Image (cartoon, rainbow, N blue to C red):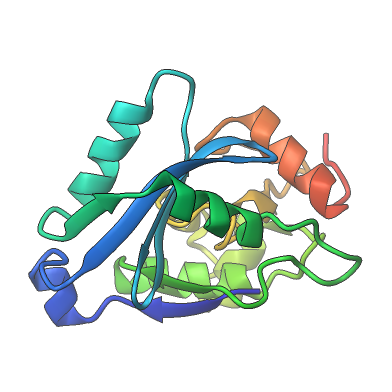
Length: 189
């Protein structure tokens, strides 16, 4: 499990003006990804479809518009090796990583609850809603899960529908299935 820090109100207000972000593209077991890191942790991880790297870079720029953004693919490749190191049974490969996220207070509560879902296990939107004390907010929880800026490290791929159906995933259902299989989670319908 990675450790999770929140962007401070000043960092949010300044849109990352004090940040130096190193970012780059790297291969992962689930396709190409764009990874970005500040001194406080990985602040962005997204999967990139073929020939969409410019759009992905622009999304990162929009996430932190005032940050000093520097592209270093070799750095991203090293981070990807750490992030996606092959997990051992009951031990995820991301134990020593730090993440930094920005979101609404509700999103942060949902993402913290996601971090408690064990490696190789699944949860539902309804269970996450109950875990944060908002049992009737499963739809809002789904929106918060979908807004996760740090894919895989905040494990939004571990959430399925109450019916047992796999459900949607920002970066595609096949990628979600691959992640769950890689972690040894039981694959839902």
